[in-house]
Length: 79
Image (cartoon, rainbow, N blue to C red):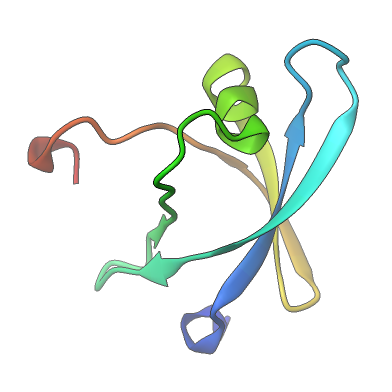
């Protein structure tokens, strides 16, 4: 897909209270297995709190959008 060369993606989450769709642009990295990883220093950001409530997201990289499931990594064993 070539997304490994991109630096940012748009994640669309469902508002945990409103139920409306929200888009946020964030940085990401790709591991050797092609999995996408995003991180934040601020777990109180709305997109993070929305994902923790509803893991169903849409991820757009360049012009390609895919439905995905997001989940937090809590230890190195999760990788």
